[in-house]
Length: 446
Image (cartoon, rainbow, N blue to C red; front, top):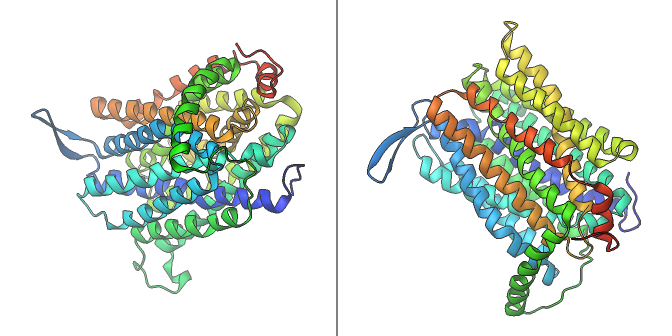
């Protein structure tokens, strides 16, 4: 197990188990089950839903509508994360804020089971609340990283968390596959379980495996105020200071802009892979769930593999290599089927994507941790969340608009490569050594 001078292995494991817990939402809700259910059933699939704007009526493709509700939820996170991150730092309240977000997320996820065919507004509102809690809670969860790990262990601990997370998401997804395809293994008759039972299982999983973090992880930050009003004032004041200071940390600022683009591409691929396989390639429910299980467990291995690779080559070269591979994956998805075996080709792409999926996200989190000044973790990770959440706005929004205009999921998927290329170009301008020195207070900050 991992060892650091800041925290013992059981505490790090308890922290990583939150990744194990909420990754069930990322897989079964965002990537595999609910996204397809909402796009194909609740929001009408290719027929879509009728929408009126300023007196004009038109139909929105179900896949596009799912992308649009993702956009709304990510906008909410982007605008609230910096303020609440600063507030959490001022009151040493990362754990308390995370508990609130987990509660909202678990309840909202359970409520997704109430959305039936045609109830795209109700289902959309519940999803917006659940996804807001999922993404927003990660601001406070990620803020613990620098408290638990020494600078030379940040990459490894981050990779460990991502790896455990993909293991957790994969295990529940496998259980969901059994529920839907082989209920007899659970002592139930055929057809007993529906996708709605999967949503309830995610809520239970998320809540249950979050408990070790709240029981065992110690918050090492010291509150600068205990007053609710003073905390609010301090958070606003510190937010102004953060806007100013993030720009002064030149390499951090460059990294956040690069992250805006490449994270955009990653999030869009995750959100649309199952819908693409379903509507473009005609994959069955069992094939799609199995496809994502392959991705989950290769992502688990990839997180550890690239986490150790950083020890030899550094964070930036390792991250750049993952982004180059992502460009190949997206290109392959556009041309999938050229051999006459589209499903088999898609599975190969899934293996490659899985290897770099966990790696690229854990490496990005680790680089953010490297460039973050001590004692301002939640605050600066709030800005990291803004970068990531605005990415999650731009990608799904652009994808949804392209699908709406062209009616083609295949054309829309090729557009994602633009975000990876932009991320690579911008990341090449980041000086990792200067960023680390600036965070330590001994380097150039302007």
